View 1: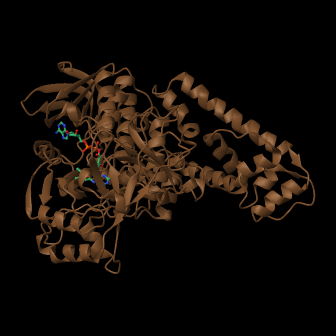
View 2 (view 1 turned 180 degrees about the horizontal axis):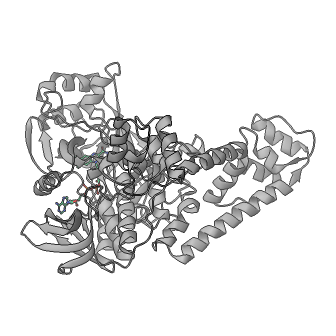
View 3 (view 1 turned 120 degrees about the vertical axis):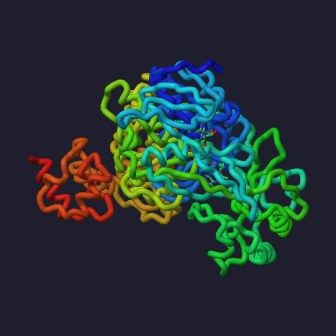
Length: 619
Ligand SMILES: Cc1cc2nc3c(=O)[nH]c(=O)nc-3n(C[C@H](O)[C@H](O)[C@H](O)COP(=O)(O)OP(=O)(O)OC[C@H]3O[C@@H](n4cnc5c(N)ncnc54)[C@H](O)[C@@H]3O)c2cc1C
């Protein structure tokens, strides 16, 4: 680690998932970058479950990869189990997820950051910001060192004013065993930011030597593995199974009997938690009709016996955690290595950010990750990368990068946050994405790699590899259009097996592929053709099978793009628009939308107000 200088182009505060992407992006953009973080050892550390991806999140990771970020490569370097979730459903719903070796993930990311050119790392706490004339000029560390910069990116995760809850005891902490950062939270309030509080929680970690695996069902990963990164060629680590068990009536009784010792149910924790990742206490009470909940026992790595019991996050006292676990099949004698706990932490209202993730009240100050009200490594990495890209573009006096909702999950994530804000930890889902048939994880490279290259994060050779993929897809589509199969017994037997009507006249393979229940692999057999690789295959199938739907979607997107492309200049005078109510005027002044499209998505902005704005913008 080098000694920190007095001046940098970019300072990133926090070495979590957002901070790593932001800092690597700064260094790779050729800008002098400093990462200030509490512990260099913990750079890229996974606070909660040892897994990357999942529904809606796999798409984010692929997009980070396509734009030139690191998370997907780290996931491949540490993956001990790959699963394509929703693989029986359509391509729009499919998302990759890996089980990670926690130590190897951490090691990989730390090494990338420490070895990155143009990037220094300082182990310290940032306590204050240097702000002059509404512009951020640097940071002040806890011992009082002032370091100047053109841009500062805050990625403080769960550490801002973090308060850990274990039963009815609570104490300051950013994660178990790590300090909370109180001063920076005070500084943000002092500078006029609207700071709120959210809550999350984690499970106890178990000693695998005390788990009876013989009575549990193993869950293996996929046989055909699709690496996370578009540039990973082969798997690095041994693949291992997870195990499945269930809570039961006895478990639920223990939880109910001890609610008077739960910080969640005695009013000690006041902040809102993650709706879609509830604690076991929440699950038992919210779904009182259910007698059991699934618990996935996930290995923490190859060189450890530790297991992460996914599905049983709790902040009940340790003795109750033990009773809960001992009531579960296979865990009757389990020993807890580390207890589960809850944590409350501060976040900044994300509507105080532009879509570039720069704050509206202090220029040159960016925020990314959990501080924006999100939850999850993948959301954090996406935001960190975009904050890094935009800070670098601003310093280079280039146009900002704002991905729109029809272009990327990342576009939806940022637009939702800065346009609607959030009152609970925001998690990405496929259902949040309107154009999800077009915006899939398999085509993230086609959608975004060109942009990644333009901002200097993707090499020319990666881009030409992607362009070659497009060529192969187009030539395969032409081939399927040109090959005509006769109504032979072989072809009609195949169709019968697929519950599809036989053909009585010669038919083109692409016409057969359009039929429900017929896949690309099926028509390949009919035409005796060779299969393309996974990504090419999906693209061919979607383009042909859903041609009409894709065309309609593209037309809808074009219409939306018309209002999204109508930019609202910074400092636009809303009082000059006649006919707007005071309430709408105030809202627009507060949100400062960057386009007419974003203005239309702000809650309470009426179609009439949008028309008035459009007329004014045209003038
Ligand atoms: C107990 C717990 C349970 C969780 N449960 C879930 C869950 O169920 N599902 C889920 O998706 N996610 C969960 N998460 C959240 C997940 O860990 C985060 O979403 C993700 O790590 C956020 O990434 P980040 O980069 O924003 O912050 P973090 O990964 O938290 O990293 C923050 C970094 O900033 C540094 N830092 C903070 N303040 C300062 C400062 N002032 N000066 C210098 N350095 C500073 C810290 O040292 C740390 O390196 C949980 C987290 C915790 C702690």
